[in-house]
Length: 182
Image 1 (tube, rainbow, N blue to C red):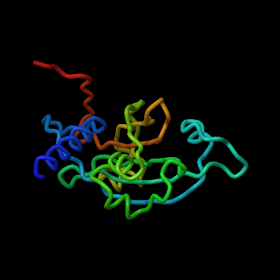
Image 2 (image 1 turned 90 degrees about the horizontal axis):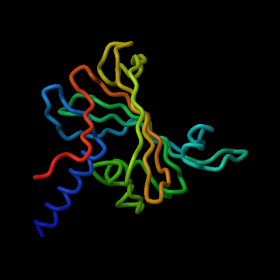
Image 3 (image 1 turned 45 degrees about the vertical axis):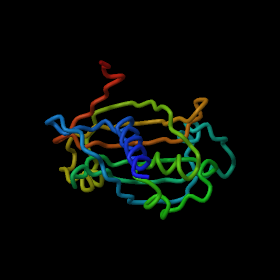
């Protein structure tokens, strides 16, 4: 029984680092803890609908909008605004998001059978707006790294559009594709 739990935790940890690329300036990669700040049902704007390959209708496509902050050792490091199609996540609730798994992608997989298999990201340096700066414990206008991600499941079906702002005061973005094998 204990071995199954260990394997599950190992898979979850690997999954976290597959999509979480923020590292302390001293090179330490610590596990983030997610805090849900907002969850609501909304209508997709045209850009999000196009990115998620949702049909444009008179009333718009239904989506869930989430806002969360990832903390590393208590420090707010990543603030994300996330949009996902309601059709892929029927019955998604705030309770499921808060209690359903250690990561959002674990919630997708465990509760809805949606596996994130790849993502594309665009990175830019921007200045933090006052609201984002407050949440990330930064000065307004302080530089942050903006990461715009589209996450996909099998057959290149887009599942999620995400805009994250990363506190780079004591952290950096590290992407290690493949690594080395012995």
